[in-house]
Length: 37
Image 1 (spheres, one colour):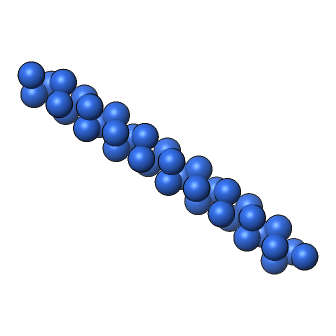
Image 2 (cartoon, rainbow, N blue to C red):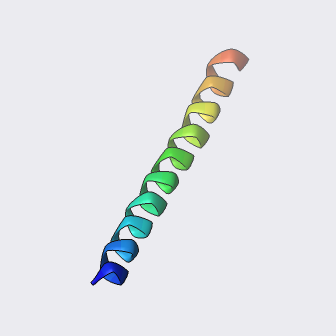
Image 3 (cartoon, rainbow, N blue to C red):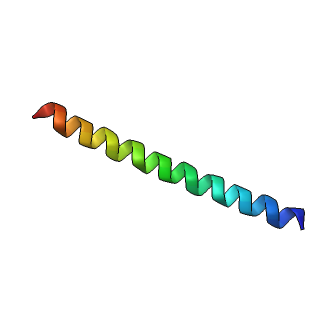
């Protein structure tokens, strides 16, 4: 039972990390485009 809970928490944290990572990359790209213009 605890294994399923740990697996769910791990999956959730990985998904959050990926979401945050993509957000940071897009933010950096948009910021770079605006500062170039």
